[in-house]
Length: 109
Image 1 (spheres, rainbow, N blue to C red):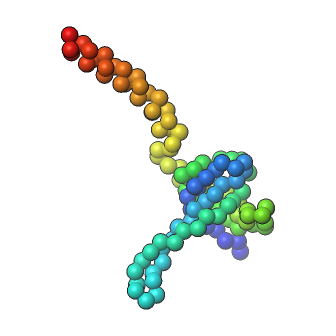
Image 2 (image 1 turned 180 degrees about the vertical axis):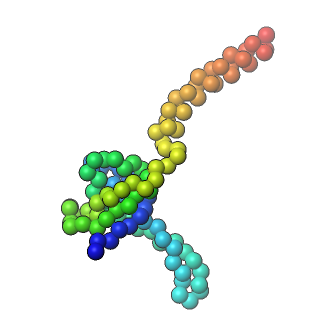
Image 3 (image 1 turned 45 degrees about the horizontal axis):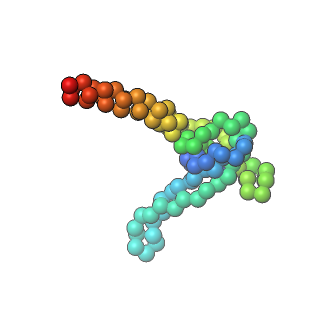
């Protein structure tokens, strides 16, 4: 049976490849304190459908390259707010500032 892992995509820059961050928490054997452990896994994404921030499920497969041992099974959840939407919002900011400046000039008169 192949391993299935769930993690967050941290990078989707290479073609047909994603880097998935898999986090889990462990308990220290002596002190009983909980701490988090994470690792990066490189996975194959044939259709380039996963983007950074997506929660995905990956499945173990045969070695596809020097580092790829997993492939994308499914996208579980997409983030509500993505960096691309933030970039679109930043473009609108100068227009708002110009309107505010015009209002301030009218108030000064």
